[in-house]
Image 1 (spheres, helix red, strand yellow):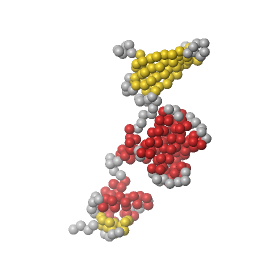
Image 2: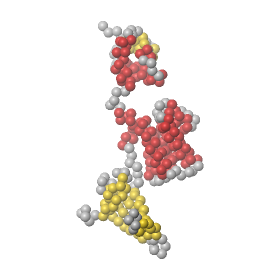
Image 3: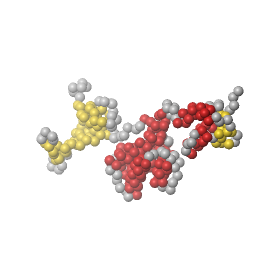
Length: 281
């Protein structure tokens, strides 16, 4: 079929995530009786000319509902539905733990089917799964969200957003209140930002940028020399640091010594948080 004989329409492509030119490969129509309510339905198989994605398109022409366009011309109201409706999955989601991936994927299916009550519950369940994966204890989701904040996974602004998802899910589960499409889209944006922040960014940059610990370890010999240390010492002796950072750096340094990656200090007997400088001839 030549391009000049092809039927072309402008339609939304869920794969391209925008309106694109589509080729209409097949088109069957059906009209209701003008004696009742006069409408026409076109059932079309279409193909996006951008990405090649095939789809099914229904165009409803309502002859009883008329309006004037910007040129002052009278037109019939038309409505379009495109199938399959889907949100393109993030290619990086293979980084997710199985439970988080499964619940999030099922939630996306509910959104694609416009099952917004189930979607609201699913978004809340995805948040629960993230908290469970991070072993955040609490009597309820409210407390676990606060743990996400206190342990540095999220900011205060993020905390407020996540509580909004909790409220949305509670209303859907307990009050059977259907969420609006705009609410679900906003909540999905927040959840995917959380997933990106907690699971994906770290994996994508792992090994590509020097970490805070790597920089500390590189400067450690110079700091030991500058302080004139000769015996046992802890990392607190080297640098004043918060307790959580002290524990993290101590654990990593112990592992590096045991794995032979550090050869200028050694563990000081059975004292876990003390190190001893190796005297070299």
